[in-house]
Image (tube, rainbow over all chains, first blue to last red; front, side, top):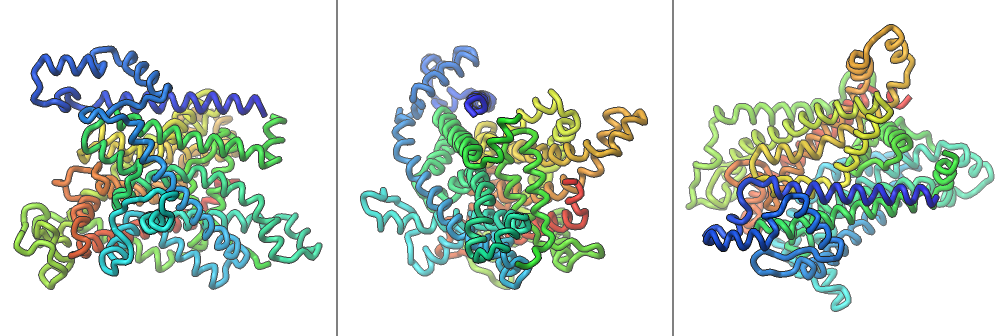
Length: 318
Length: 317
């Protein structure tokens, strides 16, 4: 266990290094001189000063090293013009995005798990086919479409909820927080329900054919207990992995949904940085997201081998 | 307990588990989503296609035909035929999908949008198919060091959340059709590589591959003539789903202001330009959204049918 842990951790560090290196390289690939983009009408001397200021006169590796050094020490850089620190922006916007994604993840699982279990049990029934067809349609419904539909009907037509979000931190006013979060969360949740439900269903169908289920039935254990205890437990591990991997899709969805509803989260800040050509800030945002994603999956990978004795043993034998 | 139906999502899950056990990395989110998409809506049938498949093929055929014929169709120009006096007009007999904020015909813009959006999605996935397929085939066939290195490259590409990677590529390199296509291709390469690798791994264990090698077939011949034909159905069904994903990704990029520049008509840009009018003229957003929904549904469904028809299950043997 400790050895695989170390190996996995080294791997994580390597991936993060490569990912940040690639993002850094991408900023250098952009056509045109970044200095001319920031101060197009600056004098030659001003441009030269800015170039030195940004460290653009140094070789690529040195620039990357400097950026990495700052990043590791928690200095995520500054915006060109306002000199606003990226750290401040992250401090206010990251919690909003995390809240949005946590709600979405939570509600998606809350709805998908019972649906997956019951449809697997009644596979082939009308209920199963109906639920399956609905979920198949949901999979084809991009989250921006759900978001726009909500904004048009619930927001603009019926005026039930505000279309433009002005998220109040939960501790300040829980009710306001939920009012603003409701539509973005629904838009983000719907597609996820379909993903989880369909995976759990097919996983459970396979589990229900296993011998230990027959044994449990033969022992006279009530169906409900078999389904929710015996069958769900192995499938829940698959679900856990998928939930972790799905964070990638969730991040992408959050960026889109935050933009439709104007939620002041990291996704919104990223697109603002893109439009304003704030590349150093953007670079830190992309790196932070990649690290977040890789770390979540690293944690789940570790958790997985702790929870599942089969994997734990297989690894130690190997 | 009832007998569960034959279920095609399972194979993909097993495929993924196979690759997991072998390469010691978890499958990526998109593979998982694909597995979810294909978790058995279409039952395996030996004869004929289900009615739904014909409807899906019909929809795609009409769409592709309209996209190709857009320049000769009797529809207004999507960019220049603007009538600002009638801006944001709802659907009428003359303009069945209404007019956008600049008074341009939304129906025409959707057809021209199909031209660009479908081109971007198809070109991206075909590129991903060729490069990712080659990488996957090679790394699945040569299991040793080459496979390890290629697998590691795939993993690094997968360590980026998809949309963020595309977003980064487009915003750093510029908002052109070519760059968006390349960004989506880069995103689809590791997905196709992963699926192809998983499938090629299990096929290359089979006896007929050993037999071919014993008869003196070279590595390239064995890969192309023995393994590829068997891996192809899985690759194709994933590619169909990949096109759907690429269409949504293009629109998502436009929606957050990081897609193709607004002067190129794509579905994403049509929706983006309508976003400001959702109060007064929601039709501007509703119609293109509906078209995207039907298209994604049709592609998902066809991917599912393809898997059922070719019975991809065999590859898990």
